[in-house]
Length: 447
Image (cartoon, rainbow, N blue to C red; front, side, top):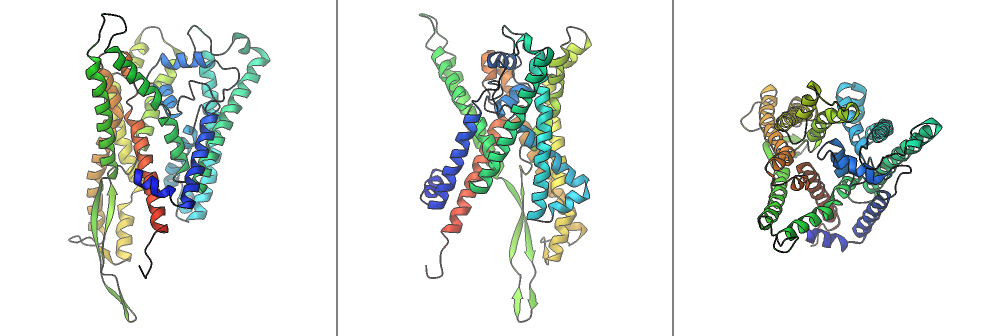
């Protein structure tokens, strides 16, 4: 990876693209520090901290802490991600969108335009919900909004300012992401999401250093030697998770394909061997986003209704992110959504027809329906393996919380989803750099 980056900087146009991407990321981090008027960041951070691990905490990690700091980029690109997921589902349900998707660049531009409009609409709904949440929440020592801003014409003015600031922040982030995609390196939206998550790294490192210091004792004669074992263990788990994610992200099942020879005029074409790659984690983090959005609804409802006793208290406690019920249901939802997402993205019948049109065949399998059935069987096995991988990564924080020795260590943020996004974006960006360097350093006829 370091060699790839060094070689990329040695190439003039790639160096400009990398520096341009870094400049956009600096602008993104500056925007993540600009506060929205009327909100009390300390009270919002306390409100999020009172419910560690729920959906607000998940969004806070994805935004790099912009949510708890009540900044302009507090919603980050979550509305765009939701809009993209909705459009992917609609391309299957609506034939016109499906045709646009197959039209190439022009069709993708049309879908992209609709996605941006849908992003603004979802950003407005999410900003409105966030405003109502912070207005009704904040039971700590400091209020999120001053009382005189919750009544009269002031409340309408404050609501308009906050919602416009959040929606504008989301629109600016989407614009910055598209600039990176056009003039920088890699997928702009993914890189901005990567930058937001990785910006939380220094706070996690500081927490580990502080816990290591606990081993020497905070007071004379008071020592906690167990931290000399716990801190290295956390680092080893972190490294093992990264290694496991890299292996599974790059893993794929290759179905061999043999193309028959054909004569056109006086020339013979075909006869070569190839393969169909089926990646284990072809759905990426989408099933986790689907499942986490669904599982977050009870916690969001709880913030509004706040029951004190009775059946609903026990019901909402089942959806506590540290409960076994939550972990099992979350795991099953990820498996189900993974199969669903792969089913709408991968069509074995279409692959079989394309092979037959191009005189290709899988060795030992007859063309037509036997080929599509064979691809479906292989796809089902690979999808199951990928679903188990995503499920284990997603529920790992819950398992870690169950076996953590104290309350503070349960919130260190060893989120498998965050690590999965970081590793996935890093690998994708490195592959983009390598492919662009190969285009610029290919061998000539005389070399």
